[in-house]
Image (cartoon, rainbow, N blue to C red; front, side, top):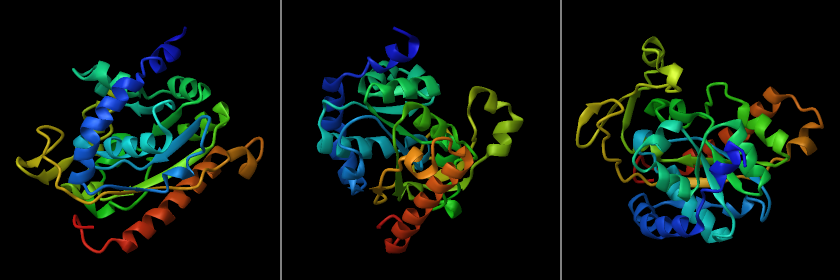
Length: 265
């Protein structure tokens, strides 16, 4: 068993169900969460879900999506989330691995997809999660296209997903990506050193983390994209990425038009 395979076998459906049943209802009520069209995910086999990332340090994205996924497909089907290695090094690392988190790498993602699991990736990572509030509804992966190669090499569809409301859980004043580069944080794969304002700490950066405001969060799963079918046997990676982001931007624009008030939804 290689390192990638050893990562994905840590997933424990019993642990995933316990966490979902414990945390899911709380998160769903607090954020009045609504995950739409989850059945756009193919009913079987591997699939790569590609989403924008929101909410800063205490992003609720996974805790909102995972319960909806398991409610639709049950606990016989693994859901793996590609996570920054720093998250898995913390005190909760072992528990998160059992719940489905795996270190973000092409090897781990491909192994999970080839096993028939669904994999959730946030290509924009912390760069996306800390985007300024004025750019809250902009799809920007900072030019990262590795997810396209992973989907092609694994022979699975890309399933775009968008969310809105996460960047309203506090005020994101600046991403701090230039400062992060000057401090050399990019060497340890941290792309942002944000400046945010919220409660109870007021003006802060990554830590201490402000408590998220109860903004209504809506997610929408879009129709799957069969890359080979739509772009041919030797697709242009940048062309596929541009198409995925365009589809996501259109869907996010639609959610934004339907949103009447910040935080309230």
